[in-house]
Length: 177
Figure 1 (cartoon, rainbow, N blue to C red):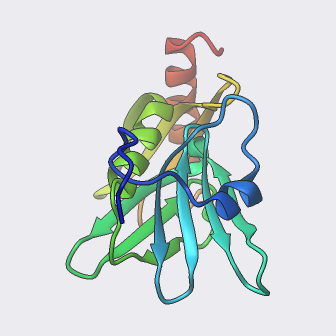
Figure 2 (cartoon, rainbow, N blue to C red):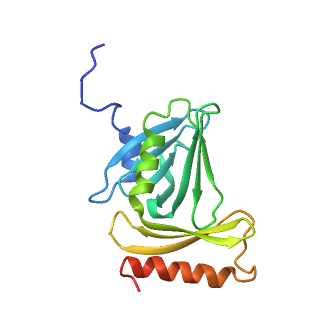
Figure 3 (cartoon, rainbow, N blue to C red):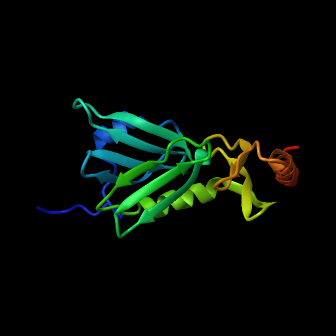
């Protein structure tokens, strides 16, 4: 068998997976990996993160979220686990990938590309929050977000006021106020 050099580090996203995603204009599928246990293909696009499953034969999109809604992604090489957390508090996504390729690096780069400005807010007693202005990579629209640290509740005394103040600061710095 002779391999054809495409200039890519990895073959393109499988056609059936790309067909299920049906990328919108301007979207480009950058990196992908298959979870062997489930057959789920995780795909990092320029604008969104996708997971395509093959349940019932035909591939279908089980996850499609824009990068500005991804809080973080962590890769554990020892466990071969990619874990993705969301800014809206949705349950984290987790994928076991024995051949992750460039997916963890691409995920990190895309999340960073969506961050315009971030600031840590000290809430006292070793508690923190992050206030962030993020960009929707598909439209360029800016949005502000607050991510509370572990054990912090928005109903805790003073938290809502401090977070609101932090959001106002970062929004003003990028001209959103």
